[in-house]
Length: 97
Image (cartoon, rainbow, N blue to C red):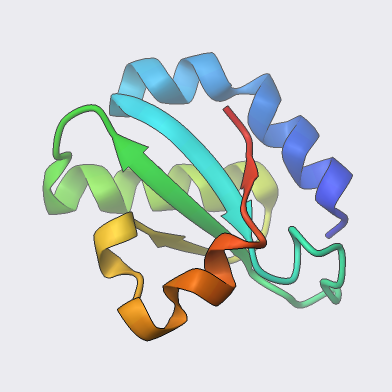
Protein backbone atom coordinates (compact mmCIF):
# COMPACT_ATOMS: atom_id res chain seq x y z
CA UNK A 1 0.00 0.00 0.00
CA UNK A 2 1.26 3.47 -0.85
CA UNK A 3 2.15 5.97 1.86
CA UNK A 4 -0.35 8.53 0.53
CA UNK A 5 -3.18 5.98 0.63
CA UNK A 6 -2.45 5.03 4.23
CA UNK A 7 -2.16 8.66 5.35
CA UNK A 8 -5.42 9.63 3.62
CA UNK A 9 -7.32 6.70 5.12
CA UNK A 10 -6.02 7.33 8.63
CA UNK A 11 -6.52 11.10 8.49
CA UNK A 12 -10.12 10.60 7.36
CA UNK A 13 -10.88 8.66 10.55
CA UNK A 14 -8.58 10.43 13.00
CA UNK A 15 -11.31 12.15 15.01
CA UNK A 16 -13.27 8.92 15.36
CA UNK A 17 -10.17 6.99 16.48
CA UNK A 18 -9.19 9.71 18.97
CA UNK A 19 -12.62 9.72 20.60
CA UNK A 20 -13.10 5.96 20.65
CA UNK A 21 -9.61 4.95 21.78
CA UNK A 22 -8.37 8.11 23.57
CA UNK A 23 -5.40 8.54 21.23
CA UNK A 24 -3.02 11.48 21.47
CA UNK A 25 -1.44 10.76 18.10
CA UNK A 26 -0.49 8.16 15.52
CA UNK A 27 2.71 7.89 13.47
CA UNK A 28 3.44 5.55 10.61
CA UNK A 29 6.95 4.18 10.14
CA UNK A 30 8.78 1.42 8.32
CA UNK A 31 8.41 0.50 4.67
CA UNK A 32 5.09 2.32 4.21
CA UNK A 33 6.50 5.56 5.65
CA UNK A 34 9.52 5.24 3.34
CA UNK A 35 7.12 4.45 0.44
CA UNK A 36 8.92 1.16 -0.15
CA UNK A 37 6.09 -1.20 0.82
CA UNK A 38 5.18 -4.21 -1.29
CA UNK A 39 1.63 -5.45 -1.80
CA UNK A 40 1.92 -7.83 1.15
CA UNK A 41 3.67 -5.42 3.55
CA UNK A 42 2.08 -4.67 6.89
CA UNK A 43 1.60 -1.11 8.08
CA UNK A 44 3.65 -0.17 11.12
CA UNK A 45 1.92 2.35 13.37
CA UNK A 46 3.10 3.91 16.59
CA UNK A 47 0.29 4.98 18.90
CA UNK A 48 0.45 7.32 21.88
CA UNK A 49 -2.59 7.14 24.15
CA UNK A 50 -4.00 9.87 26.37
CA UNK A 51 -4.59 7.16 28.98
CA UNK A 52 -3.60 3.48 29.03
CA UNK A 53 -6.16 1.48 27.02
CA UNK A 54 -5.61 -1.91 28.59
CA UNK A 55 -5.12 -5.04 26.51
CA UNK A 56 -8.70 -5.13 25.21
CA UNK A 57 -8.58 -1.51 24.01
CA UNK A 58 -5.20 -2.04 22.34
CA UNK A 59 -6.43 -5.15 20.51
CA UNK A 60 -9.65 -3.39 19.47
CA UNK A 61 -7.65 -0.49 18.02
CA UNK A 62 -5.40 -2.89 16.11
CA UNK A 63 -8.43 -4.71 14.66
CA UNK A 64 -10.11 -1.41 13.73
CA UNK A 65 -6.97 -0.24 11.92
CA UNK A 66 -6.64 -3.56 10.07
CA UNK A 67 -10.26 -3.39 8.93
CA UNK A 68 -9.86 0.24 7.87
CA UNK A 69 -6.66 -0.38 5.90
CA UNK A 70 -7.52 -3.92 4.73
CA UNK A 71 -4.08 -5.21 5.68
CA UNK A 72 -2.06 -6.38 8.66
CA UNK A 73 -1.06 -3.68 11.13
CA UNK A 74 1.93 -3.81 13.45
CA UNK A 75 0.77 -1.52 16.25
CA UNK A 76 3.33 -0.44 18.85
CA UNK A 77 3.74 2.03 21.67
CA UNK A 78 6.94 4.02 22.32
CA UNK A 79 7.75 1.80 25.30
CA UNK A 80 7.57 -1.28 23.06
CA UNK A 81 10.30 0.02 20.73
CA UNK A 82 13.60 -1.66 21.49
CA UNK A 83 16.14 0.98 22.60
CA UNK A 84 18.80 -0.29 20.21
CA UNK A 85 16.41 0.12 17.24
CA UNK A 86 14.57 3.24 18.39
CA UNK A 87 16.86 5.81 16.73
CA UNK A 88 16.81 4.13 13.33
CA UNK A 89 13.03 3.73 13.50
CA UNK A 90 12.35 7.29 14.69
CA UNK A 91 13.85 8.82 11.54
CA UNK A 92 11.08 7.19 9.45
CA UNK A 93 8.14 8.44 11.53
CA UNK A 94 5.43 10.40 9.77
CA UNK A 95 2.81 11.98 12.03
CA UNK A 96 -0.73 11.11 10.96
CA UNK A 97 -2.56 13.11 13.57
